[in-house]
Length: 284
Image (cartoon, rainbow, N blue to C red; front, side, top):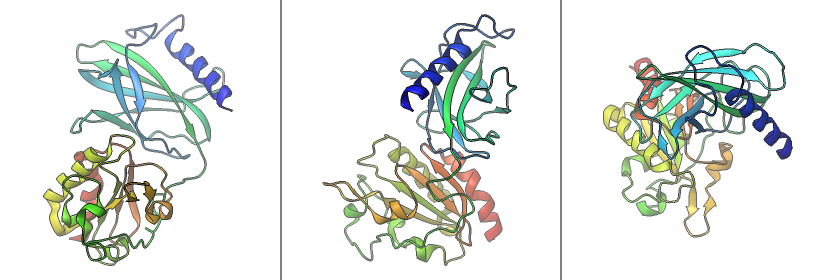
């Protein structure tokens, strides 16, 4: 299967980057832009797809507009299934973009980003992803598991509740089970800031911290440290309860304890705020 997927990727890259002709105003040949996907669970429907754009080791500068075309691979001469404009989030450590295209069929999808720079130059960058039929992580609309995560009441040592250097005590005051009984929206961050495998955990917790500073006790804010043992790196039981195998993840729950939004990977304060703000209005 891995060899087949590699072959599909190679063919898609050749088709997208090395064709004999290109649309007017679009550069042909190998693109100077590379797409790095920032989340990895995609289910049929309208999955959230986040990505960064690089020029070598550095983020591509002066990006004015990004449009993404989606097409199921293996369908010769097929028309694109969807064309969407990517939403930029520049209030993050590395700027990233988000799309939610219509992807109605499982399989390997080929996406092509058409990137317009501030000077009017347009370039393309292809990337692929696999769409499945079933979520592993708790999906949108589902009731949050009534997790009994550790708090300062059960573990008074704050530095056993977080691998971060300066944990915020406000994030360890209640369990998820208790939070969903308050009638308030709840933000739950699954992250391990001192031991993160993806380097995104600390910036994501910074985004949660920023929003907490803005809304205070209008919502519940909970950090669940991914590991309960910083030496053996064993997972806390909440990871299995929520179907999580990677970090970071951030969930936004409505006042009834149902999943209103979920974010895998990088998350800017603005994107998190856009998900939480409507729930705060409902609670007022």
